[in-house]
Structure formats: C-alpha cells, structure tokens
Figure 1 (cartoon, helix red, strand yellow):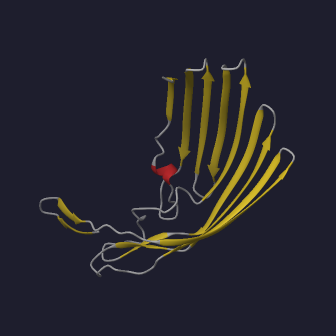
Figure 2: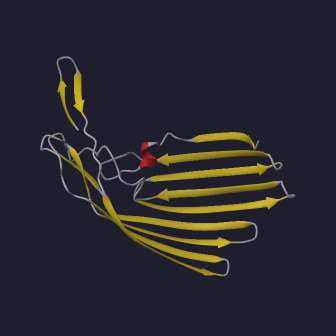
Figure 3: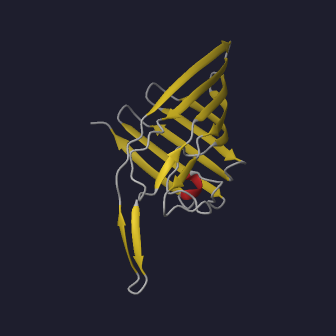
Length: 202
C-alpha cells in the first residue's frame, strides 16, 4: 500500500496494489494405532517466494520461512472419544518494509491463525433407536504464547429420520494484540456466540 494524509482537512488517500505470493510446502505425516489409541505427528516446511516485484514507494509485507510441528493422541471407546492436539510454529513471521512501515506497529496481516496452541476435546454419542441419537462434543483450546483460551460446545439431537435439533456455543478470552503477539483469536476476541436451531431434510 501507499498513501498520504492531509492534516489540514483530516483526509487520507490510500493506494492498494494486490499481491500474490507463491510458496512451496514440504511435509510428512506419521500415525500409529495401538488398540483404541491412535498417535500421530506432522511436520510441514513452508517456504514463501521472496522475489520482490514492487517499486520502492510501496509498503509491503515480507514473509519468513516457517516450520509447523503438530502432534496428537486420540482415545476411542464405544461411547466417548478423547483427544489432545499440540501445534508449534517456528518462524513464519510477517514484517513490513517500505516508507510507511514502523517496527513498533503490528503488521496488517498474519499468515497463521495462531502460532502455538494446545487443544483438549471430548465427544460422545448415545443411540436410543434406529433414528434417534444424541451426539455432543466439548473442546478447550489455549495458548500461552498467543495469550488466548477458547471453549467450544456442540450438541445435536436426531429426533427422526428427517428432523435434527442442534446447539452450539463459543466462549473466547484473549489478550491484546501486539507486535509480538499476532493471532486471529485475539483479533476477534468479542466473538462469543450461542446458537440453537433445527434442520429438516426434504
């Protein structure tokens, strides 16, 4: 982007130029199952193209290489499923360069919703008849590095072959966005929500 501010009339003019950045990904996954316990791990190397096609007048983002490491454990039983997941991202920062850039100001965009998180989840189901069934799940996601926590609840009652009643709730608690703490959860910290509805299959 590029722009000017006319203080006398308190007006700004901003020019925007779209940018498409290609990147290459190299990844690997490994899973192993022992009875009703499943273990898994993933690694992804993210390499953005650093070629610069902009003139010096443009303030623009510069993308850093990143390594994403993920692991999980799932325990499945007849009625209840338990899981734990972990995500860590090294690198992958976005910095702005150009005439309007300021290292003390957070960049206008991020590459990942968050950079580190733990999630605990539990889900289950109970069948009352061929078409009547209750399913539900709860999850708790938190990050010390990104300073947020999020609770999610979901329940669905299948009343018949055609009718379903469902409900969802999401509660978020997040710290402030800073230059060193960029994440979508904090950006939408007031996005607590609750919904209830019904669906009918024609």
